[in-house]
Image (cartoon, rainbow over all chains, first blue to last red; front, side, top):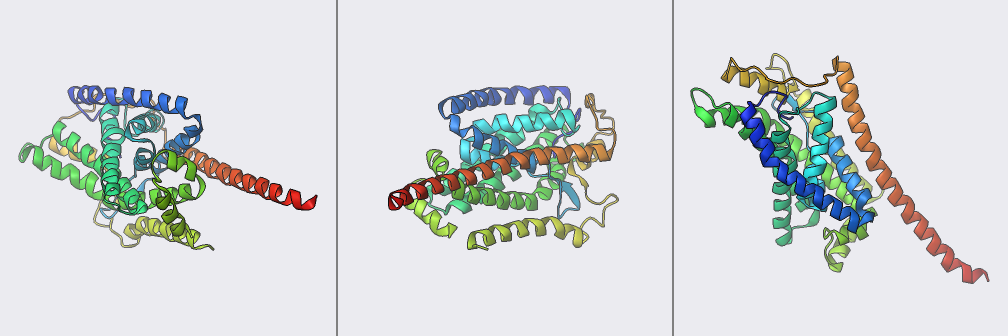
Length: 232
Length: 112
């Protein structure tokens, strides 16, 4: 769930836009380089964008008695690195802002920052860290997607608390308030997103071994064999 | 069903359970409007903190009704699902084609 249109004061809206812009520009460059150097990855890029499209259209009920939706940015960040997700996430957010009145143009910068920048980077960071420790691939994928999803909404809560500090309890009070709305609601949804990302990654391991090896997701021959053993 | 398919089905089942349980357990019963969007709740929280705040911009286009909005959300999900299904279908077809070609190559000398 993104910050609604007009719900960030102009100064904040502009500041988040300025903060996000370089990431998106850099992302567009990475994306065009990837497509030029590896035209065969266009299809998988499309699939990663499509995954974000599906997941951010699914508004799911949560334990807090309210609804929110996952982001789907972890998968693309793991496959193609976060800069490319900055672009794919922005496209999804634009679609929702323009056609669905969900999120908004004035809050696009802030929403891009949370969903298309911090989420992918946080998820990717956790994924890389766990891989270095030799954690099984699917566990790292789950953790990466979970963190990408949850961190997105933690950032959303911080953004709102910065813009609307509580008159009594200040920034922290507001953070508690927005955090209980966004972040707590998101925990079970982040688990769902982790599981769905694992399903897609399992299907990719079966169907696109060559691509995954090229992208560095499947590392060594022994790693591949371990995956095959899991697949059977 | 292969073991692989079974694991995927179990994972999907877990996702479905996570979505259905809050509804079944009535976790939204304490609310005036159960299972509203978190973004709408945030808007309420903003007006609680700052009662004078007025959104200074409104969406350029707003779906005229809940029905149209849900149709557009469904369209978004369908577009994404369509592309994903195309990807996996294409991959599967290619793999089968390659296998068949390899099989034909292996069989060819035997037929001579």
